[in-house]
Image (tube, rainbow, N blue to C red; front, top):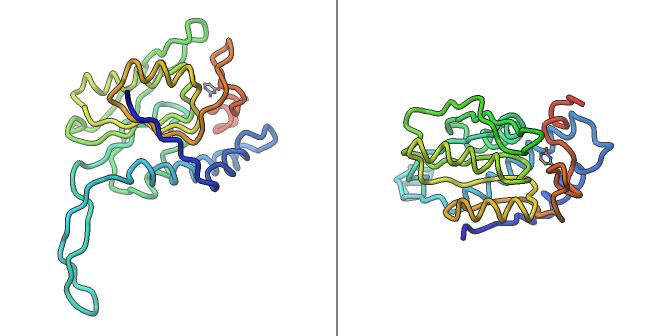
Length: 209
Ligand code: URA
Protein backbone atom coordinates (compact mmCIF):
# COMPACT_ATOMS: atom_id res chain seq x y z
CA UNK A 1 0.00 0.00 0.00
CA UNK A 2 1.34 3.46 -0.90
CA UNK A 3 2.39 5.52 2.05
CA UNK A 4 0.23 8.50 3.05
CA UNK A 5 2.09 11.46 4.58
CA UNK A 6 -0.16 13.86 6.50
CA UNK A 7 1.83 17.08 6.77
CA UNK A 8 0.57 18.49 10.05
CA UNK A 9 2.97 21.43 10.31
CA UNK A 10 1.23 24.20 12.33
CA UNK A 11 1.81 26.81 9.61
CA UNK A 12 0.12 24.59 7.04
CA UNK A 13 -2.77 23.80 9.38
CA UNK A 14 -3.27 27.49 10.19
CA UNK A 15 -3.32 28.47 6.52
CA UNK A 16 -5.63 25.56 5.69
CA UNK A 17 -8.13 26.72 8.31
CA UNK A 18 -8.13 30.17 6.69
CA UNK A 19 -8.77 28.52 3.32
CA UNK A 20 -11.72 26.56 4.67
CA UNK A 21 -13.42 29.76 5.86
CA UNK A 22 -16.26 30.66 3.50
CA UNK A 23 -15.47 34.36 4.12
CA UNK A 24 -11.90 34.10 2.77
CA UNK A 25 -11.77 36.06 -0.51
CA UNK A 26 -10.45 34.67 -3.80
CA UNK A 27 -7.15 36.57 -3.75
CA UNK A 28 -6.31 35.38 -0.23
CA UNK A 29 -7.42 31.82 -0.99
CA UNK A 30 -5.11 31.69 -4.03
CA UNK A 31 -2.20 33.15 -2.09
CA UNK A 32 -2.65 30.65 0.74
CA UNK A 33 -2.79 27.72 -1.68
CA UNK A 34 0.48 28.84 -3.24
CA UNK A 35 2.10 29.15 0.18
CA UNK A 36 0.92 25.70 1.23
CA UNK A 37 2.05 24.37 -2.16
CA UNK A 38 5.53 25.61 -1.40
CA UNK A 39 5.54 23.93 2.00
CA UNK A 40 4.17 20.66 0.63
CA UNK A 41 6.84 20.79 -2.06
CA UNK A 42 9.43 20.97 0.70
CA UNK A 43 7.99 17.78 2.22
CA UNK A 44 7.48 15.81 -0.99
CA UNK A 45 11.11 16.43 -1.97
CA UNK A 46 12.52 15.69 1.48
CA UNK A 47 14.20 12.41 0.48
CA UNK A 48 15.57 13.44 -2.92
CA UNK A 49 19.08 12.04 -3.39
CA UNK A 50 22.14 14.27 -3.24
CA UNK A 51 25.76 13.77 -4.18
CA UNK A 52 28.84 15.56 -2.87
CA UNK A 53 30.34 18.18 -5.15
CA UNK A 54 33.38 20.35 -4.67
CA UNK A 55 32.66 23.99 -3.91
CA UNK A 56 35.04 26.86 -3.27
CA UNK A 57 33.87 29.14 -0.48
CA UNK A 58 35.68 32.40 0.35
CA UNK A 59 37.53 30.35 3.00
CA UNK A 60 38.56 27.30 1.01
CA UNK A 61 37.50 24.18 -0.86
CA UNK A 62 34.99 21.68 0.53
CA UNK A 63 32.75 18.82 -0.60
CA UNK A 64 29.04 19.59 -0.07
CA UNK A 65 25.74 18.03 -1.24
CA UNK A 66 23.95 18.92 -4.45
CA UNK A 67 20.74 17.40 -5.82
CA UNK A 68 21.36 14.35 -7.97
CA UNK A 69 19.09 11.73 -9.46
CA UNK A 70 16.04 12.27 -11.60
CA UNK A 71 14.93 15.71 -12.69
CA UNK A 72 11.47 16.84 -11.63
CA UNK A 73 8.22 17.35 -13.48
CA UNK A 74 5.31 19.09 -11.77
CA UNK A 75 2.01 17.83 -13.15
CA UNK A 76 -0.99 19.90 -12.07
CA UNK A 77 -4.40 18.45 -12.86
CA UNK A 78 -6.39 21.26 -14.50
CA UNK A 79 -7.70 23.43 -13.30
CA UNK A 80 -7.41 23.45 -9.50
CA UNK A 81 -3.98 21.80 -9.52
CA UNK A 82 -2.54 24.92 -11.14
CA UNK A 83 -3.21 26.68 -7.85
CA UNK A 84 -0.29 24.75 -6.35
CA UNK A 85 2.10 25.33 -9.23
CA UNK A 86 3.65 28.74 -8.59
CA UNK A 87 4.50 27.83 -5.01
CA UNK A 88 6.17 24.61 -6.12
CA UNK A 89 8.09 26.31 -8.94
CA UNK A 90 9.29 28.92 -6.49
CA UNK A 91 11.19 26.15 -4.69
CA UNK A 92 12.25 24.16 -7.76
CA UNK A 93 12.45 26.69 -10.61
CA UNK A 94 14.18 24.26 -12.98
CA UNK A 95 11.33 21.74 -12.87
CA UNK A 96 9.38 21.04 -16.05
CA UNK A 97 5.60 21.14 -16.11
CA UNK A 98 3.07 18.67 -17.52
CA UNK A 99 -0.54 19.83 -17.80
CA UNK A 100 -3.29 17.26 -17.47
CA UNK A 101 -6.81 18.45 -18.25
CA UNK A 102 -9.60 16.47 -16.64
CA UNK A 103 -13.12 17.38 -15.70
CA UNK A 104 -15.47 15.53 -13.47
CA UNK A 105 -18.65 14.32 -15.12
CA UNK A 106 -21.32 15.74 -12.78
CA UNK A 107 -23.51 12.63 -13.09
CA UNK A 108 -21.03 9.74 -12.98
CA UNK A 109 -18.31 11.68 -11.05
CA UNK A 110 -15.83 9.96 -13.40
CA UNK A 111 -12.82 11.88 -14.75
CA UNK A 112 -12.92 12.77 -18.44
CA UNK A 113 -9.62 13.84 -20.10
CA UNK A 114 -9.60 16.84 -22.45
CA UNK A 115 -5.91 17.88 -22.46
CA UNK A 116 -2.53 16.25 -21.95
CA UNK A 117 0.85 17.86 -22.61
CA UNK A 118 4.05 16.59 -20.98
CA UNK A 119 7.80 16.99 -21.63
CA UNK A 120 9.07 14.44 -24.18
CA UNK A 121 11.43 12.89 -21.60
CA UNK A 122 8.77 12.63 -18.90
CA UNK A 123 9.35 8.86 -18.50
CA UNK A 124 12.88 9.49 -17.21
CA UNK A 125 11.79 12.01 -14.59
CA UNK A 126 10.23 12.02 -11.15
CA UNK A 127 6.69 13.31 -11.64
CA UNK A 128 4.84 15.08 -8.85
CA UNK A 129 1.14 15.11 -9.67
CA UNK A 130 -0.88 17.77 -7.85
CA UNK A 131 -4.54 18.47 -7.24
CA UNK A 132 -5.82 20.22 -4.10
CA UNK A 133 -8.78 17.90 -3.55
CA UNK A 134 -8.52 14.09 -3.49
CA UNK A 135 -12.27 13.52 -3.39
CA UNK A 136 -13.48 10.39 -5.22
CA UNK A 137 -9.92 9.78 -6.39
CA UNK A 138 -11.06 9.32 -10.00
CA UNK A 139 -9.22 12.35 -11.44
CA UNK A 140 -5.95 11.51 -9.72
CA UNK A 141 -6.15 7.87 -10.81
CA UNK A 142 -6.96 8.86 -14.40
CA UNK A 143 -4.10 11.41 -14.54
CA UNK A 144 -1.55 9.03 -13.08
CA UNK A 145 -2.71 6.16 -15.29
CA UNK A 146 -2.14 8.40 -18.32
CA UNK A 147 1.39 9.17 -17.11
CA UNK A 148 2.04 5.47 -16.59
CA UNK A 149 0.92 4.80 -20.18
CA UNK A 150 3.65 7.26 -21.20
CA UNK A 151 6.20 5.13 -19.34
CA UNK A 152 6.48 7.15 -16.12
CA UNK A 153 7.10 4.93 -13.10
CA UNK A 154 8.37 7.33 -10.46
CA UNK A 155 5.28 9.26 -9.36
CA UNK A 156 4.21 11.07 -6.18
CA UNK A 157 0.83 12.70 -5.53
CA UNK A 158 0.30 15.91 -3.55
CA UNK A 159 -3.05 17.26 -2.40
CA UNK A 160 -4.36 19.68 0.17
CA UNK A 161 -7.34 17.66 1.42
CA UNK A 162 -8.21 14.01 1.03
CA UNK A 163 -11.48 12.20 1.69
CA UNK A 164 -11.02 8.79 3.33
CA UNK A 165 -13.11 7.19 0.56
CA UNK A 166 -11.00 8.73 -2.21
CA UNK A 167 -7.79 7.82 -0.45
CA UNK A 168 -8.89 4.18 -0.19
CA UNK A 169 -9.83 4.10 -3.89
CA UNK A 170 -6.52 5.73 -4.82
CA UNK A 171 -4.44 3.34 -2.76
CA UNK A 172 -6.26 0.30 -4.12
CA UNK A 173 -5.70 1.47 -7.72
CA UNK A 174 -2.17 2.86 -7.29
CA UNK A 175 -0.45 1.07 -4.40
CA UNK A 176 2.96 2.21 -5.68
CA UNK A 177 2.19 5.94 -5.53
CA UNK A 178 2.80 7.74 -2.20
CA UNK A 179 0.53 10.62 -1.21
CA UNK A 180 1.25 13.87 0.63
CA UNK A 181 -1.74 15.74 2.05
CA UNK A 182 -2.28 18.50 4.60
CA UNK A 183 -5.34 16.76 6.07
CA UNK A 184 -7.72 13.83 5.76
CA UNK A 185 -11.28 15.10 6.24
CA UNK A 186 -14.41 13.34 7.52
CA UNK A 187 -16.16 12.03 4.43
CA UNK A 188 -17.36 12.56 0.87
CA UNK A 189 -20.96 13.73 0.41
CA UNK A 190 -23.41 12.44 -2.21
CA UNK A 191 -22.25 15.10 -4.70
CA UNK A 192 -18.59 14.07 -4.40
CA UNK A 193 -17.59 17.00 -2.19
CA UNK A 194 -15.23 16.65 0.74
CA UNK A 195 -16.85 17.41 4.13
CA UNK A 196 -16.11 19.71 5.90
CA UNK A 197 -13.62 20.56 3.12
CA UNK A 198 -13.48 24.04 1.65
CA UNK A 199 -16.01 23.89 -1.18
CA UNK A 200 -15.09 23.84 -4.86
CA UNK A 201 -11.35 24.52 -4.97
CA UNK A 202 -11.36 25.61 -8.63
CA UNK A 203 -14.18 28.09 -8.07
CA UNK A 204 -12.50 29.47 -4.97
CA UNK A 205 -9.10 29.85 -6.69
CA UNK A 206 -10.47 31.52 -9.79
CA UNK A 207 -13.56 33.28 -8.39
CA UNK A 208 -15.90 31.56 -10.81
CA UNK A 209 -18.92 31.30 -8.56
N1 URA B 1 -13.41 19.07 -5.75
C1 URA B 1 -13.48 20.22 -5.05
O1 URA B 1 -13.09 21.27 -5.54
N2 URA B 1 -13.99 20.17 -3.81
C2 URA B 1 -14.42 19.03 -3.24
O2 URA B 1 -14.86 19.06 -2.09
C3 URA B 1 -14.34 17.86 -4.00
C4 URA B 1 -13.83 17.90 -5.24
